[in-house]
Image 1 (cartoon, rainbow, N blue to C red):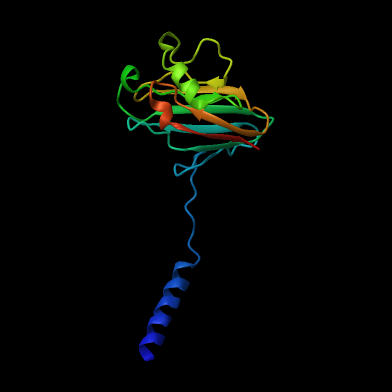
Image 2: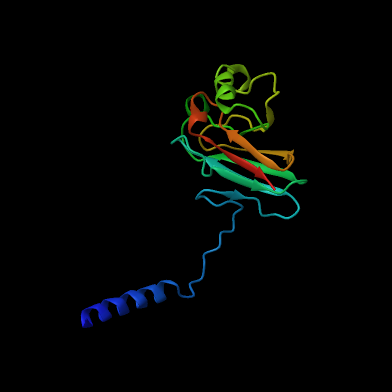
Length: 166
C-alpha cells in the first residue's frame, strides 16, 4: 500500500509541475509552422508560407478575415531550380475539383502551370525556384473554405490545404 501511495504522489507531483506557469514562446511571424497559418495584422491579412524541396508547404490551413486584402508571400526554402522543383500558390474558387484542376494545370507549361482560362482561380503566385520569394495581394473572397495547392506537375497530391475566410 505504501508503494501505491508513493507512486501516486510522484504522479501527482509530476502532473502539477508540468502544468506550472511556463511562459509560452511567442512567435513574431505571421504564421505557425505546425499546421495552421493565421493572418495577424488587423488592417490587412498578411500571410507567409514556405515550400521546400521535400514538396511540402509549411502549413495545411490558412485563416484570414473577410472584407480585407490578403498579402501573401511564398518563399521556396529549398535549393532546386524551378524547372525541377518549382512551387507556386494557387487559390481555387469554391467547388473546383482539385484533382481535375491539378491535371489540367500540369499541361499548362507556357503559363507556369496555371490554365489559360483562369475560370477556376481566385489568385496565384508566379512559379519560383529554390531561394526565391514572391508576394501577391488580392481581396479575400467571401467567407467560407477554399482549396489551395501548388500546381507544378504532380505536386498537388501533397502540396495542398484549406484557405478559410472568417
